[in-house]
Image (cartoon, rainbow, N blue to C red):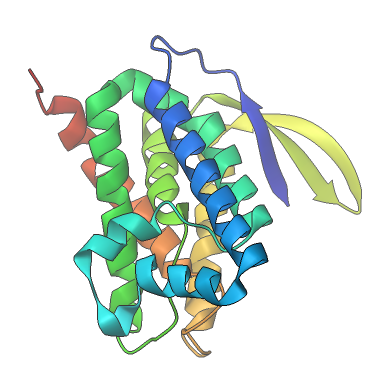
Length: 215
Protein backbone atom coordinates (compact mmCIF):
# COMPACT_ATOMS: atom_id res chain seq x y z
CA UNK A 1 0.00 0.00 0.00
CA UNK A 2 1.27 3.47 -0.94
CA UNK A 3 0.33 6.54 1.10
CA UNK A 4 1.69 9.96 -0.02
CA UNK A 5 2.81 12.46 2.58
CA UNK A 6 4.38 15.25 0.48
CA UNK A 7 5.49 16.20 -3.02
CA UNK A 8 8.45 18.13 -4.45
CA UNK A 9 6.38 20.31 -6.76
CA UNK A 10 6.78 24.06 -6.10
CA UNK A 11 3.83 26.44 -6.41
CA UNK A 12 3.54 30.02 -7.63
CA UNK A 13 0.36 31.13 -5.89
CA UNK A 14 -0.57 30.84 -2.25
CA UNK A 15 -3.40 28.24 -2.36
CA UNK A 16 -6.03 30.29 -0.55
CA UNK A 17 -8.92 28.34 -2.08
CA UNK A 18 -7.43 24.99 -1.05
CA UNK A 19 -6.95 26.31 2.48
CA UNK A 20 -10.50 27.67 2.44
CA UNK A 21 -12.00 24.37 1.28
CA UNK A 22 -10.09 22.48 3.97
CA UNK A 23 -11.14 24.98 6.63
CA UNK A 24 -14.79 24.88 5.58
CA UNK A 25 -14.84 21.07 5.61
CA UNK A 26 -13.30 21.01 9.08
CA UNK A 27 -15.75 23.59 10.45
CA UNK A 28 -18.76 21.76 9.03
CA UNK A 29 -17.48 18.46 10.41
CA UNK A 30 -17.06 20.00 13.87
CA UNK A 31 -20.61 21.35 13.62
CA UNK A 32 -21.89 17.91 12.57
CA UNK A 33 -20.01 16.20 15.39
CA UNK A 34 -21.33 18.65 17.97
CA UNK A 35 -24.90 18.04 16.81
CA UNK A 36 -24.44 14.27 16.88
CA UNK A 37 -23.05 14.41 20.42
CA UNK A 38 -25.73 16.73 21.79
CA UNK A 39 -28.68 15.30 19.85
CA UNK A 40 -27.99 12.23 17.70
CA UNK A 41 -31.42 12.44 16.04
CA UNK A 42 -30.74 16.00 14.85
CA UNK A 43 -27.29 14.94 13.65
CA UNK A 44 -28.77 12.13 11.57
CA UNK A 45 -31.40 14.49 10.24
CA UNK A 46 -28.68 16.87 9.06
CA UNK A 47 -27.05 14.11 7.00
CA UNK A 48 -30.40 13.08 5.51
CA UNK A 49 -31.30 16.68 4.69
CA UNK A 50 -28.00 17.80 3.16
CA UNK A 51 -26.41 14.56 1.97
CA UNK A 52 -27.15 13.41 -1.57
CA UNK A 53 -29.78 10.66 -1.61
CA UNK A 54 -29.88 9.14 -5.13
CA UNK A 55 -33.55 8.10 -4.90
CA UNK A 56 -34.50 11.63 -3.80
CA UNK A 57 -32.19 13.49 -6.15
CA UNK A 58 -31.75 17.18 -5.40
CA UNK A 59 -29.14 19.12 -7.35
CA UNK A 60 -28.48 21.49 -4.45
CA UNK A 61 -27.56 18.55 -2.26
CA UNK A 62 -24.75 17.69 -4.66
CA UNK A 63 -22.99 20.81 -3.44
CA UNK A 64 -23.88 20.55 0.25
CA UNK A 65 -22.83 16.89 0.37
CA UNK A 66 -19.35 17.82 -0.92
CA UNK A 67 -18.58 19.61 2.34
CA UNK A 68 -19.84 16.96 4.76
CA UNK A 69 -18.11 13.81 6.02
CA UNK A 70 -19.13 10.57 7.65
CA UNK A 71 -16.34 10.38 10.23
CA UNK A 72 -13.00 11.69 11.41
CA UNK A 73 -10.84 9.37 9.28
CA UNK A 74 -13.00 10.13 6.23
CA UNK A 75 -12.33 13.84 6.75
CA UNK A 76 -8.61 13.50 7.48
CA UNK A 77 -7.95 11.24 4.50
CA UNK A 78 -9.69 13.59 2.08
CA UNK A 79 -8.14 16.76 3.43
CA UNK A 80 -4.67 15.20 3.47
CA UNK A 81 -4.81 14.40 -0.25
CA UNK A 82 -6.21 17.85 -1.04
CA UNK A 83 -3.44 19.47 1.00
CA UNK A 84 -0.72 17.62 -0.93
CA UNK A 85 -2.05 17.88 -4.48
CA UNK A 86 -4.52 20.76 -4.53
CA UNK A 87 -2.02 23.60 -4.23
CA UNK A 88 -0.32 22.86 -7.55
CA UNK A 89 -3.59 22.67 -9.48
CA UNK A 90 -4.75 25.92 -7.87
CA UNK A 91 -1.42 27.55 -8.73
CA UNK A 92 -1.82 26.50 -12.37
CA UNK A 93 -5.51 27.39 -12.81
CA UNK A 94 -5.73 30.41 -10.55
CA UNK A 95 -8.06 30.75 -7.60
CA UNK A 96 -11.42 31.23 -9.36
CA UNK A 97 -10.93 28.64 -12.10
CA UNK A 98 -9.64 26.15 -9.54
CA UNK A 99 -12.72 26.54 -7.37
CA UNK A 100 -15.01 26.09 -10.38
CA UNK A 101 -12.96 23.07 -11.46
CA UNK A 102 -13.25 21.57 -7.97
CA UNK A 103 -17.03 21.97 -7.96
CA UNK A 104 -17.30 20.54 -11.49
CA UNK A 105 -15.38 17.44 -10.45
CA UNK A 106 -17.62 17.09 -7.39
CA UNK A 107 -20.74 17.27 -9.55
CA UNK A 108 -19.38 14.72 -12.03
CA UNK A 109 -18.41 12.41 -9.19
CA UNK A 110 -21.83 12.60 -7.55
CA UNK A 111 -23.63 11.93 -10.83
CA UNK A 112 -21.35 8.97 -11.51
CA UNK A 113 -22.33 7.35 -8.23
CA UNK A 114 -26.02 8.23 -8.52
CA UNK A 115 -26.25 6.68 -11.98
CA UNK A 116 -24.88 3.41 -10.61
CA UNK A 117 -27.76 3.07 -8.15
CA UNK A 118 -30.62 5.51 -8.66
CA UNK A 119 -32.81 3.72 -6.11
CA UNK A 120 -30.48 4.08 -3.13
CA UNK A 121 -31.89 5.76 -0.02
CA UNK A 122 -28.48 6.04 1.65
CA UNK A 123 -27.17 9.63 1.75
CA UNK A 124 -23.80 10.26 0.10
CA UNK A 125 -21.43 12.69 1.80
CA UNK A 126 -17.80 13.60 1.34
CA UNK A 127 -15.31 15.57 -0.72
CA UNK A 128 -13.72 12.41 -2.15
CA UNK A 129 -15.15 12.80 -5.65
CA UNK A 130 -14.11 16.43 -6.05
CA UNK A 131 -10.64 15.65 -4.69
CA UNK A 132 -10.39 12.68 -7.07
CA UNK A 133 -10.79 15.19 -9.89
CA UNK A 134 -7.87 17.18 -8.51
CA UNK A 135 -5.80 13.98 -8.40
CA UNK A 136 -6.71 13.17 -12.00
CA UNK A 137 -5.63 16.62 -13.16
CA UNK A 138 -2.39 16.37 -11.18
CA UNK A 139 -1.54 13.00 -12.72
CA UNK A 140 -1.78 14.26 -16.31
CA UNK A 141 -0.30 17.72 -15.67
CA UNK A 142 2.58 16.69 -13.40
CA UNK A 143 3.23 13.01 -14.20
CA UNK A 144 6.93 13.20 -13.29
CA UNK A 145 6.52 15.20 -10.07
CA UNK A 146 8.32 13.52 -7.17
CA UNK A 147 5.94 12.24 -4.51
CA UNK A 148 7.15 10.96 -1.16
CA UNK A 149 5.13 8.00 0.05
CA UNK A 150 4.95 5.60 2.96
CA UNK A 151 5.03 1.97 1.83
CA UNK A 152 3.12 -0.50 4.01
CA UNK A 153 4.12 -4.06 3.12
CA UNK A 154 5.02 -6.25 6.11
CA UNK A 155 7.34 -3.40 7.13
CA UNK A 156 7.00 0.38 6.76
CA UNK A 157 9.43 2.44 4.71
CA UNK A 158 9.44 5.59 2.57
CA UNK A 159 10.24 5.98 -1.12
CA UNK A 160 10.01 8.69 -3.76
CA UNK A 161 8.09 7.88 -6.94
CA UNK A 162 6.60 9.80 -9.88
CA UNK A 163 3.08 11.14 -9.39
CA UNK A 164 1.77 9.11 -12.31
CA UNK A 165 2.61 5.89 -10.44
CA UNK A 166 1.14 6.95 -7.10
CA UNK A 167 -2.07 8.34 -8.58
CA UNK A 168 -2.31 5.67 -11.24
CA UNK A 169 -2.19 2.97 -8.55
CA UNK A 170 -4.76 4.92 -6.53
CA UNK A 171 -7.14 5.02 -9.51
CA UNK A 172 -6.68 1.33 -10.30
CA UNK A 173 -7.56 0.52 -6.68
CA UNK A 174 -10.75 2.59 -6.97
CA UNK A 175 -11.63 0.94 -10.29
CA UNK A 176 -11.00 -2.55 -8.94
CA UNK A 177 -13.11 -1.89 -5.83
CA UNK A 178 -15.84 -0.32 -7.94
CA UNK A 179 -16.03 -3.29 -10.29
CA UNK A 180 -16.12 -5.69 -7.34
CA UNK A 181 -18.98 -3.72 -5.82
CA UNK A 182 -21.13 -4.23 -8.92
CA UNK A 183 -22.00 -7.66 -7.61
CA UNK A 184 -22.64 -6.36 -4.11
CA UNK A 185 -24.96 -3.91 -2.40
CA UNK A 186 -24.25 -0.43 -3.77
CA UNK A 187 -26.43 1.34 -1.24
CA UNK A 188 -23.82 1.68 1.48
CA UNK A 189 -20.10 1.85 2.25
CA UNK A 190 -17.63 3.66 0.00
CA UNK A 191 -18.90 5.49 -3.08
CA UNK A 192 -16.31 3.98 -5.41
CA UNK A 193 -17.94 5.30 -8.57
CA UNK A 194 -17.85 8.82 -7.20
CA UNK A 195 -14.06 8.46 -6.94
CA UNK A 196 -13.85 7.01 -10.44
CA UNK A 197 -16.21 9.60 -11.91
CA UNK A 198 -14.43 12.52 -10.26
CA UNK A 199 -11.02 11.29 -11.44
CA UNK A 200 -12.21 10.96 -15.03
CA UNK A 201 -13.94 14.35 -14.99
CA UNK A 202 -10.76 15.94 -13.61
CA UNK A 203 -8.68 14.49 -16.44
CA UNK A 204 -11.31 15.36 -19.05
CA UNK A 205 -11.93 18.98 -18.02
CA UNK A 206 -8.53 20.21 -16.83
CA UNK A 207 -7.55 21.42 -20.32
CA UNK A 208 -10.85 23.26 -20.71
CA UNK A 209 -10.35 25.06 -17.42
CA UNK A 210 -6.75 25.92 -18.31
CA UNK A 211 -7.94 27.70 -21.46
CA UNK A 212 -11.06 29.23 -19.91
CA UNK A 213 -10.58 32.99 -19.49
CA UNK A 214 -11.91 34.84 -16.48
CA UNK A 215 -11.62 38.62 -16.59
